[in-house]
Image 1 (cartoon, rainbow over the protein chains, first blue to last red):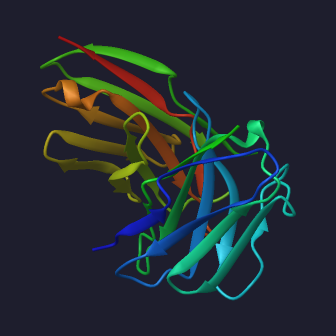
Image 2 (image 1 turned 135 degrees about the vertical axis):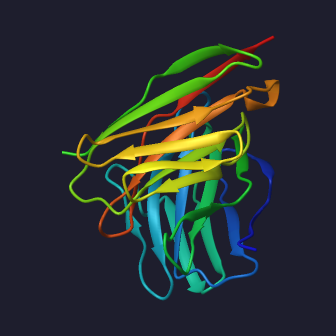
Length: 116
Length: 109
């Protein structure tokens, strides 16, 4: 149980275009999901907390107009990178919080974004 | 403030034992997690401690001392596949996870 899928696994896009990444909890309902990014050889950096039915909470320094998050259902959250630039190239990982204690986070497999 | 410290990198030999330490200072505490992350992959859950003491799971054990703000992950009978980054994360009272920077573990034959 507690499987989280992420799509696409990898994507290459041109500078200036937008990319949408989907995160789904397959066998449980996730009121809260998280979006992280990770640069090579660095640790996870939390970008935002996504709550079903409400606006996402962004971490300091993360542009909410650039990284649009939508959590319209209990099993789906999406991250859209708008007007992507090469510096947005990174590994984006989502996680979903479990329904019961200890409320651990279950991670999706990640999406590798390359902006050319 | 909030702070989680763990060594940046450690090296150990196949078949040996290694202990990865994590110290933390957070405003609240609702448990401590250890995750394993292989290069290019997402983290996977290893262990959870909320009470003081040792939790054992096969070759992996995790220890917690809340009074000292200290935890360690113990890996026994090391295998080459254990080469990965190990992330320590503290769950605060609001169930938000505060992540350490991770410890890269290199296993040598």
